[in-house]
Image 1 (cartoon, rainbow, N blue to C red):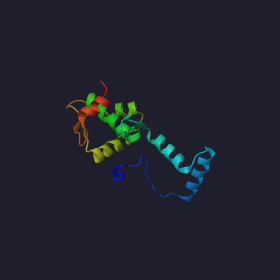
Image 2 (cartoon, rainbow, N blue to C red; image 1 turned 135 degrees about the vertical axis):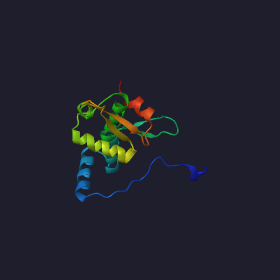
Image 3 (cartoon, helix red, strand yellow; image 1 turned 180 degrees about the horizontal axis):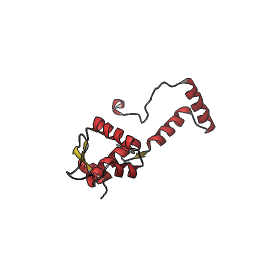
Image 4 (cartoon, helix red, strand yellow; image 1 turned 90 degrees about the horizontal axis):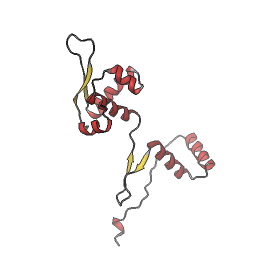
Length: 148
């Protein structure tokens, strides 16, 4: 058996933290009857919302999209499938107009996704359209996050 090609299922992560953080974590782990490394792993997995993708030999972890990235995809899905303005988007996501503007800038900076507000001549109201999907797959975003 070639030992060089066999990978261990475990890996080490080293990071620095403030001493008082470590002290709190050790005490909490002890209260829960766990070693520190197991306690940290448990809480990191819970925070990431990891779930198994496959039971096969190549099992990988898939991270649920939460937080801002989830809102970004929902925004793109709304704009791609409906005529929505910032008021509609903010109401549906429960965010402020300032948050929407920040999301819009982040989406362009991170994904290259370019949105443009379209206002027909003679109309007070308009809607957003996506002019460039950047690195995102338009069909995948629509199928996962678009709403009729």
